[in-house]
Length: 258
Ligand code: SF4
Image 1: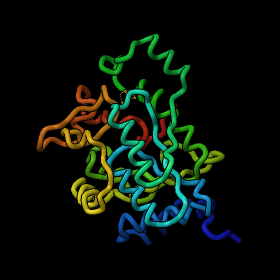
Image 2: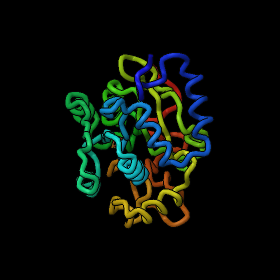
Image 3: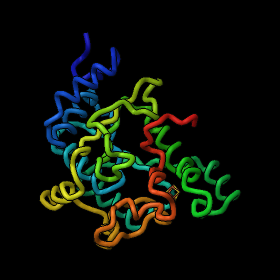
């Protein structure tokens, strides 16, 4: 008999996903976060974690806090974040009384990249290689210890690459613990950026001070810039590249060869 709150994915993952999708189709984002944590939390909260980087992710933490169950939060320190972002991590930790699990890239891989190509190779040969070293591989390591993760992705962040994401799906790229299918929860998928900021203001959720300086989507310092009123938020990311390339590899919908 399956113990209470044990992960359900183990039979037919597709059947379980469809059941969750039907059940949560009209649920609030807060309810979806609570459901994900109780479904995979297994009392200790060890097998599911919230991915933290942007404004949306603090809303997820707020909802996790309200759920009143143990939860984990991780973030990827690429080594190239804004000083404001490092301080913001500390602010969020203090606000919620939590410790965010900061994950770092492999020192040898970073050394090889920087000594071979310099510190700004992404401006000339694209962001994929640097993102692979500083983001994708560290994320792969974190996810290999989990059965599920929670992201702050929204459909309106990038209609081309995120326009059809589901509230809950199987991660198409990364396996989970022991190579098992990894469940990816996207509780904010159907919300707009305005919805998120309405919640931030209403609940007095802390936010990165860069947002007050025109930054909307915040990533690494060399690859992020402020946008003008009316510009889409993703226009501030990797602005020297084509629109269809504006994903860092953490959320691609195809499994690469590696
Ligand atoms: S966003 Fe820029 S600096 Fe950060 S990992 Fe990707 S290419 Fe490197």
